Each structure stands twice: as C-alpha cells, then as structure tokens.
Length: 287
DNA sequence: CGCGTTTGACCTGCGC
DNA sequence: GCGCAGGTCAAACGCG
Image 1 (spheres, protein in one colour):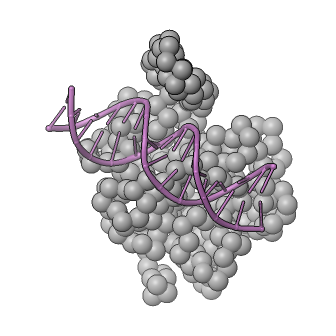
Image 2: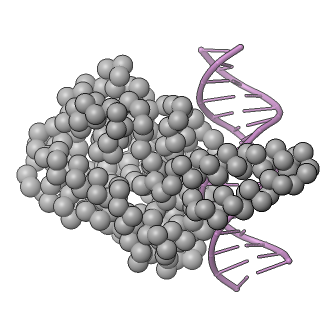
Image 3: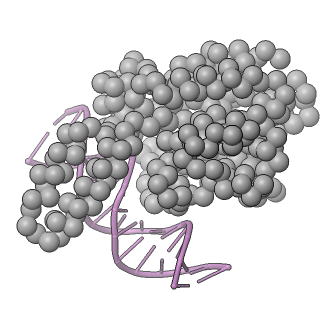
C-alpha cells in the first residue's frame, strides 16, 4: 500500500461504481504524502494556501444549484447502476443527484393510501406520511462522495451517526451501510461502502447538510478543525447551519485517526467536485 | 435503561 | 405484470 504513495489515485475507476454513487462526474483527487511539503495533506493545504472564499463559492454553488449532477451522465447511460431508480430519474429530469425523489406525486400517493381501513395499513400509511413530509421538507439534497483509503469502513468525521440499514451491493462482495446523523432534526445521511475494485478504498457518500455543530469540534477534539478556515467559517455562522465546505472539511480531516490511529491508512482523498472541479483543481494546483 | 447495530421485511422505481 | 435492485423501516438484540 505504501508503494502507492505518490501515485495518482485518479486512475480509471470503475464507472459502475461511480454510477452507484453519483460519482460519474469529475473526481478530484488530492494526494498528500505526509512528508512531502509539496504534496501536503489536505488539511494543511486548506490551512495554508487555500482561499476559503473561492472554495466556499465553489461549494455553495455546487450545492445549491440544481446542477449538482449533470443531466448527461453515465448514470443515465448505465442501466445497471444501483440506485438508478432515483438517480436516473433525477438526473434526467431535475439534474439532481439526490435520491429522495421528493416530488409531490409521492406525497399524494401516500395520502390516498392512508384511506385504507386496515389498522396495519393505517399504521403504515401514517409512517409513509411522515416519511413523505420529511421528504417534502428535505427536497433535493446535495451529495458528495469521498474516496478514502482506509482500512476501516466507517470513518470518524466528528458527527455521530446511527446505522439504519445495510444492503448487499450488486457485483460487489462488500455491503453498503446506511447511516443517519443522530442529531435531532438533522437529516443528513451517508452511505458507506468499500470499493470492490480496490478494497482499500472506502467510498463515503454524504447527502444533505448538517444543521448543527460538529459534536467533536464542539468538544475541541480536533485542533486541526479549530485552526482551519473552514471551521472558523462554520462556527461563526451557526444560524445558517454549517456550510458544506465545513462539512466537507471535517470529512477530509484525518479524524479517522482518532478512531483508530493504528489501523487507519489515510493515504488518499478524493472528492466529487460536481461542476466546479476545474476551479478546485486550480485551487489545489496553485501551489 | 438508553443508545446503537443487525437484519429481514417492505416499499419504490425501473426495465423487460 | 414481474423481477431486480436500491433504499428504508423497525423489531430484536447487544453493549456499556
């Protein structure tokens, strides 16, 4: 594994896997061997040479825009794509990468169902209504996928997550785990799976934005975060919720080392940079 | 006891 | 309509 250091991770990645994660767009990879100042860590890079506003702008745009995912993507082309039900739909209609499929039709359908008399169905309908309302509220959430070289699947990112499901992934021996943020009213979800092509790579897909502080940062667990421009930005604007850069940044931090410093191989990071990866590329290559 | 995980069932959308 | 696959739910269970 160590011999991979210095090797660009931007290798031909399995498009099928990208499709599964809506990662069919440009992927930006940051290499950060620890000892090479020219290839400093993601964290250090942000700390020292990144203009936060630029990156923030990039993220803000990419997150708020309905063009998070291009309408023309491999997902649409690849029928075998997992999660294609929602992703294909959104990518061909709303250009969204969100799987919530939060359209009104769903809500109405559920409302009709609630008229059933069967108590079981009633219960179910109630639940469905709740889910629909949540979906309605949530609408389209931006998604960001991260490739992380790690031996542990669930990387520590400072937030608390509750696992609510696990599914076997087609064509992959590794299951996909579904996590929800345990914070109340926080609808952020994430999926964690291991690349079947490169088992050392953990693919984490985040959906939504946290509407609360990162618990770990509040406890002062991460000096890296505290000293970072991202953290400063997020912490100074709590009312509007942590920005995505902050969220992103917290994910990029080697916080997994907090969880298991000995076992983590935090070698490479890569991000999905939806539409502005060019800009980000500039940002990261400016040094 | 509270919280988190596991896991089978269920729902939904899509393609054939 | 049926089968498949992704996504979610919730009861059961485990752990501190």
